[in-house]
Length: 124
Image (cartoon, rainbow, N blue to C red; front, side, top):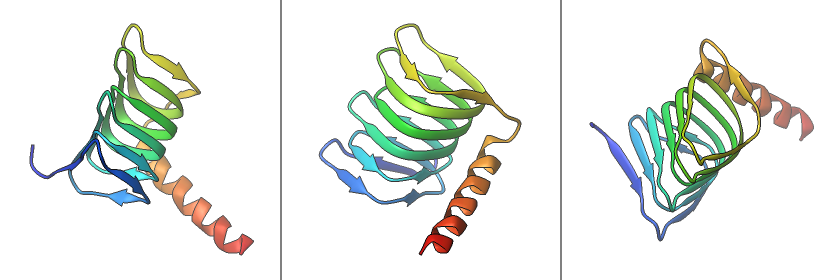
């Protein structure tokens, strides 16, 4: 599986994570996550923007998700707008938000992030 960053259950991270490999979240992240692949486990939670090739959610996610393929597993809790090329919903998952099928979702995430940073500079 190459490079893997594991966030243990006891960890609570506030801030952005950019990692050139897979991320496994057992703890809590409040901030944006950009990686190749992310797995949010049953006890894991991410509040922020997630951008990856593959996103699998068994726990909780809120914010926005930009991924080529997203899988929402049974009993997950997702309150987010999802921009994807492929979306799989298992029976029993909870999803509230918008789903938009787009050709290159991660490129859209980069554009949205760049525009938001520019707007933030203008406000200050």
